[in-house]
Amino acid sequence: MKKYHNRGGFILVLSVSLFYALFTCFVVWGITLEGFSNGAIQFLILEILSLILAIALVVFFFRRMSRKTAAKNAFLTLPEQTAQVKVVSKSKKTVGDRYSTGSIFYITFEMPDGDRKNFQVIHDSYATIEKDDMGTLTYKEGDGYKFFVHFTRNVGKD
Image 1 (cartoon, rainbow, N blue to C red):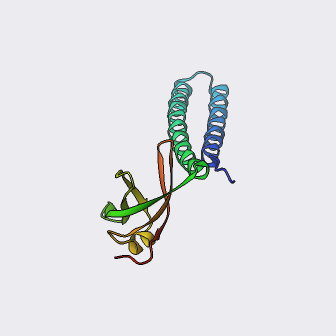
Image 2 (image 1 turned 90 degrees about the vertical axis):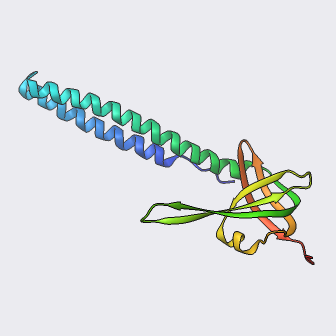
Image 3 (image 1 turned 180 degrees about the vertical axis):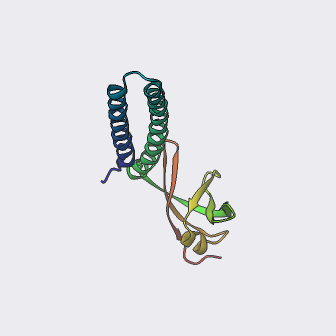
């Protein structure tokens, strides 16, 4: 089973570290040429502020990438569950701005115990599954994650 890793976070940390190392070299070079002149002190303050900003950006992006990685790994490790369900409703949410828009598709299934579960699905599944369809739902759920896997319609629908 393939596990996903946070390569984006690693590359970000590496690039910020390289930038900071080069920036420090310029500051040290400037101080040794000019002594502690007014310009060197301002450059040192700029370096400290950029370090604080760089650390904040690294923490923000690393946390964001870690959440995405955790979701991908959860999908791989959670066990598949199946249930005989009925499609209760379908909905579509349009997202975006004036330059670019997209749609997110949802289908709500009613489980045998009467509980309703809402899943985000791709357009193909949304288009082929109709309201009031009965069939077998395969999904993964646990650890705060819920994933739609597959829906097979029962033959001989009324």
